[in-house]
Every structure is written in C-alpha cells, then in structure tokens.
Length: 55
Image (cartoon, rainbow, N blue to C red; front, top):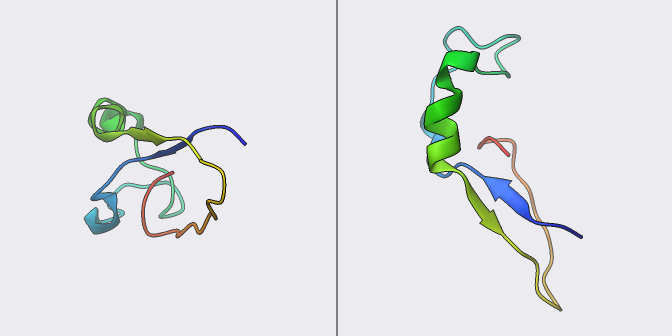
C-alpha cells in the first residue's frame, strides 16, 4: 500500500462552486497542495477513510 495524502481542515470548506459539490475548482488547487500531508502505513496499521476531507 502506498502513501495516503490528505489535506487537513478541508472538511470545513463549503462546496461553493464545486462541480457536483465534490470537486473543487482548479483555482483552489495551490491551497490544497500546500495543505497536503502524506502519511505512510506501518505494519499493523488499519485504514479508515472519511469523505469529510479531500483525499
């Protein structure tokens, strides 16, 4: 399994101008890339993902 990339705090972003209220406008990408954090799994980890943040 590879890295999991998440943009913390994006669960609070309102989906204004998001395509289908899911996909942010490309103008927001620089901010999201700045927030992005990669985490790498370690032996024994489990993966639980939520749709509340962009990942």
